[in-house]
Length: 109
Image (cartoon, rainbow, N blue to C red; front, side, top):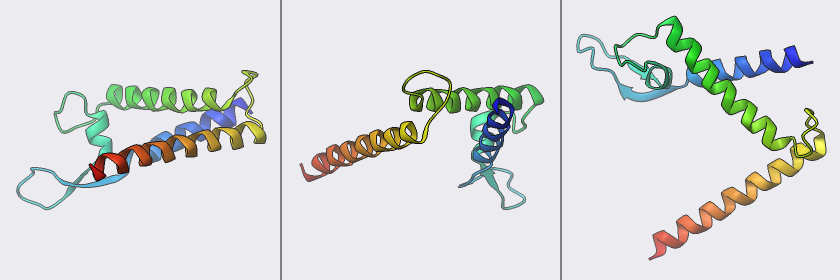
């Protein structure tokens, strides 16, 4: 079960780094687009992602995913029940609703 969760987390982390952006790169001779993977993982900004940078990026994304899991695991037993997941979703929706409300109030002023 833990291995399955780990593999799913890695798959999610890898796919989230590959999301394209519309920011063009500065190669000059061809039109291409830099993905958010490069923005997030190319820490030395050399235009390449080393194995070390890739591994560090995966670790960071996995830490974010585990923090999300831990936030859902309300009773701290290492398991997320359907009820805990639904409660976490409700908390998240309430938080988003409050952010939208505050943003709309700022826009009206």
